[in-house]
Amino acid sequence: MKGKLYIVATPIGNLEDITLRALKTLKEVDVIACEDTRVTRKLLSKYDIEKPLVSYHEHNEQQKARELISLLESGKNIAVVSDSGTPGISDPGYRIVTLASQKGIEVIPVPGPCAAIAALSVSGLPTARFAFFGFLPKSAKKRKEFLESIREYPETLVFYESPNRILETLKDIIEVLGDRNISISRELTKVFEESLKGKASCVLETLRQRQSIKGEITVVVEGKHHEETDLGQEVERELKECREKGLSLKEAVQTVSKELGISKNLVYRKALTVWQKQSRA
Image (tube, rainbow, N blue to C red; front, side):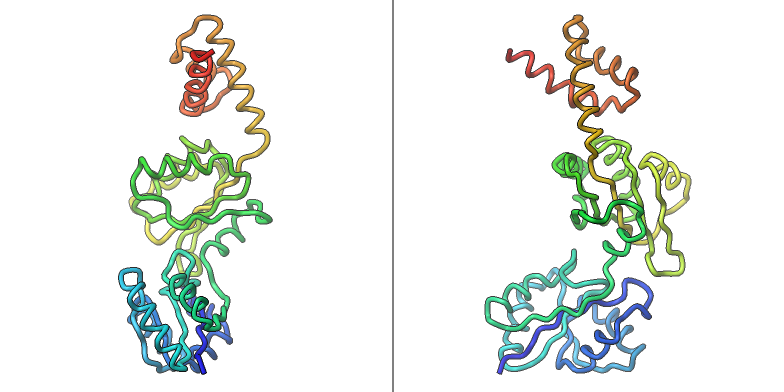
C-alpha cells in the first residue's frame, strides 16, 4: 500500500502559529522533507517531535523528489515543509507534488501560514481578486520588463522582495506601474513586524530615510483602475494634439506631463506609440 504525501504549512516567524493538525501530522509521518534541517529541527524541538529529516531544497529538488517518491511507493508517509510558510508557494514542493500525482499517490494539504496571504489580508487593498508572482527578477532590466507585462492587470498584485532590492523595486514600480497605492509588510509575525501603506512614492521616501532595511518583504500593489485607462486615452489625445502642432516628441512629453501632472516616463511610453502610429500613417 502506497504512503501519503502531506504538504504542511509551518510558521513564517512566530512558532506559535503552527496548527494543531500540522503538529499531529508531523508527529505521525515516517519522514519529514525540509529545506534546512536546522530550521525545521528548531520547530520540532519546541514541540518535542523527533522524526528522520531529509534535506529537500531548490538545489536538490529534482533528485530528492524521485527518492522521496520511492519511499512513498514503499508505504512510507512523508510530510514536506519549507523553512517558513506553505511549501510550493515560492518554495520547493511542486515537483514532488507533480510526481506523486502522476504515480497515483495521495497528496494532502495541511494548510496554515503564508506570507503572501497574511500581507494581503492587512494591506487594505482589494482581496476578491489578486495575482501572486513570487520573487521579482533580480536584474533591473528584466524586473522592469516583467512589471510592464503585468501593468494592465486589474487584480491586486502580490510579490516577494529582498530588503537589498526593495528601494530599486519601488522606483521601478513607480516608473512602470505609476504611483499606485501599495502596502509593504516586513518581518510578519515577528517582534519587529511592520506594514507601511500609502502611495508608492511615500513608502519609498520613508524607507530611504532608514540606515538599513531588514527582513523578507511582501509587496502588495493595487491593480490598474478603469480611471487609469481613461487617463491613458487623455494622454494619447494630448500627445496627438502636440504632434499636430509640430512639437517634438521630447517637447510633447514635457508639455503633457506638466499639464496632467503625471510621470514623464509614463507619458514617454505612450508618446512612442503615438509617434510610431503617426509615422506609419
